[in-house]
Amino acid sequence: MAGYFSGVGKIRYEGPQSKNPLAFKFYNPEAVVAGRTMREQLRFAASFWHTFCSEGGDMFGDGTRDVSFGGKTPMEVAKNRIYAAFEFMSKLGIEYFCFHDRDIAPEGESLAEFWANLDEVVPLIKEQMKKTGVKLLWGTANLFSHPRYVHGAGTAASADVFAYAAAQIKKALDITIELGGSGYVFWGGREGYETLLNTDMGFELDNLARLLHMAVDYARGKGYRGDFYIEPKPKEPTKHQYDYDAATVLAFLRKYDLVDEFRLNIEANHATLAQHSFQHELRVARINGVFGSIDANQGDMLLGWDTDQFPTDVYNTTHCMLEVLRAGGFRNGGLNFDAKIRRASMNPRDLFVAYIAGMDAFALGLRIADRIIRDGRVDQFVADRYASFRTGIGAEIVSGSATLESLADYALRLGRVEEKNSGGQEYLESVINSLMFSGI
Ligand code: XLS
Ligand code: NI
Ligand code: NI
Image 1 (tube, helix red, strand yellow):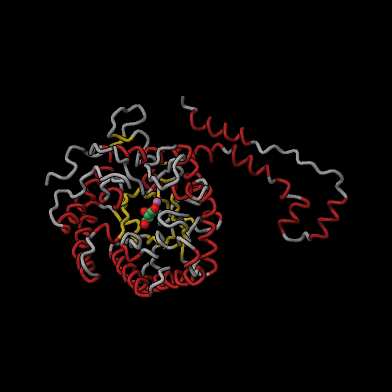
Image 2 (spheres, rainbow, N blue to C red):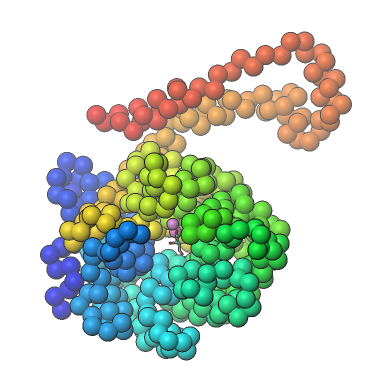
């Protein structure tokens, strides 16, 4: 078979001097960084929806890409798409993929028809996985596109819609398990509200937790050992989404006794929408022991919506990889390019170029993060900053032996207290720059 991307061969590492747009400049899969190969550290994944399903339209304009891959019927399109996807990932050396149920098969006229369609394509996916060695990072159910989910899925006001969502989750879990997926994602696109006037917020959140408990019980009962993830996002498509940001999701997981089963899938552009940095969201997840996986993209700082651009900002990938390394690396998660090429990027090779740019940006981020850790100046600065808590009264505070009274007695004897330690922000930023650009 000629293939769908016959104009492009296997993408190889050619080094930073290469001017070949179809070569890696920094991502060298077998090079070892921080004790593992880049391939193992970065665990890149392709998103089925943006990469192989999206025609590239926006709310004002039609698509600029043909993603039928020569198929004439919806089932033919679905099958051709699968061949195309595995060809694309193999050429790039991407080892994982992520999908929504709706991405891989047409929904048809009924749930039964949808399931029959899924049953027809899953063996094909399995065969392609075996042939190419590409694995499933995570699966999910699309509980936001169809009009039935206009008021939510797990937080719907209709019990029938809730049941339909449960059915979709059950099937998506079955497929994830069958394909050996290492994760399953819940992104609550419609789980939120447009107005509080019509919303019983407490009841909706109780219901959402009920659904998540059912999903965990079901999958664990089937022997699933992978991760469950919640992907925080503050808004869009709804005005307010319940999974607003990492801290909000944590409070929800703790309240409903789900924190032992769930980790977070942090998406860069969702952090931006919540007015946090990507690093902040990752840090919150890491220090609370729920760092799981990453949707790698970037937003535009001047736009207030989820532009899902390919990540090329190396400061961001560096700060991200610092958090990943400090978390001990990925376990079941990875870097899923939940990213789409711009509407105007209609040259067929733009898709390859975009992935190469994103993978190179993360390769750089990984290398620089490793340098920052090995250099030690930043860590030393932070350690010194809190040094007063390691001896004397500080050690008493940390060990729990100090009380409000003992601290008051101590403070009365101190006389004038002044903070003399600089925060050193400019110094630290210049250290990062010198580590980033020392080769120039
Ligand atoms: C949308 C989300 C979505 C999830 C999967 O903004 O990022 O793509 O990752 O449902
Ligand atoms: Ni995402
Ligand atoms: Ni998103």
